[in-house]
Every structure is written in structure tokens, then in C-alpha cells.
Length: 197
Image 1 (cartoon, one colour):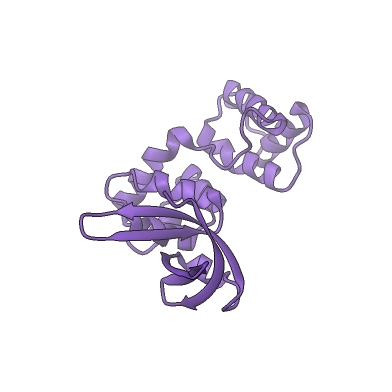
Image 2 (spheres, rainbow, N blue to C red):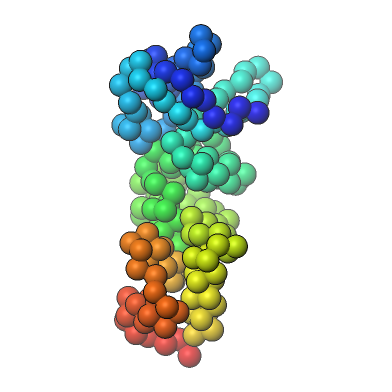
């Protein structure tokens, strides 16, 4: 497996790049957001990769960050979501934004992706609903432990993971996690202070 490539950017097409790694040119399929973030030609580039092996071809997919690659690998396990649609999703969303749309069951936003219809969007929501906290710190870290405690407190109050995920993600991304009580107060305020029980 080729986990990442590090070399020089040689060429860019509508959906792929050519990377020179010690004299060997690798063609890598990338999503639209990656195309907009590339360095100039002949500049150094490091890109995470996933190799698709078909009967008649090998295709290398490239990602700006490991989180994108992990999301891509999850997406292609879902019935009806192939690599092309998965790349379209990543071209439209940062991973955190995708998880927010799923958590908020935002069909309109999800169906704005080329190749994702209403049924596919509903399938994405269904498949990801039990894994809705990817993108948050690992539970083995100090921050992850705080997030887990906050989530447990909110579940005890009757909220679902899907309801509170966007607020927890915002606290983590903006560096606003405080004590459990402070974080709980912030999430409840964002939820309009509504206790479910």
C-alpha cells in the first residue's frame, strides 16, 4: 500500500495531479478542494494516498490530510457510494462540515453534492448516525475524555448524539472547552436551554 507521496508537483489536470518522487511520476486523483489548495508547479508536495485495485487498472486517490482519507475509506463502504461520489463529497466538504451536515440530518446540503440524491443522502445519515463523533479528539487523550464526559452528560439529559454533535464540534474547534459544567452550559445555551427530561 502507498500511504503517502512526497515529491514535486509536475502537472495538474481537471481532477488529478502528477507527482515526481525521485524520478518516478505518480498520477493521483484528487478532489476539487485539494486542486484549489495545491502549491505551484515544481514545488514540494506531500499527499496521503489510497490505492484502488481493479481487474484492469490501478488508481491512486490523494488527500490533503489523513482525516480526509479515513472519511473516504468509510464512504466507499456504503452501498451506492463509489470512489467518484466519495471524492465529490470531499470536494464539497471539509470532514468536519460533512459530519455536521450528517448530524443535523441536512438533506439539502448533502444533496448539493454531484451524484448524491435524496436516497443516497438518507443512506449517509443512516450509516453514519452511530459513528457521528469522528473528527473529535480520541477518547484516550485528555481532551477526548472531556468530550466523552460532556457527551455522557448530554445523553443523560435526553439529547441525542446527532443533536449535540455540532455544538461539541464547535467548542473543540474554537478552543472553548472548559470544565464539564462550563461546556455543558454552553451547549445547553446553544440548544436554547431545553432539557429533554
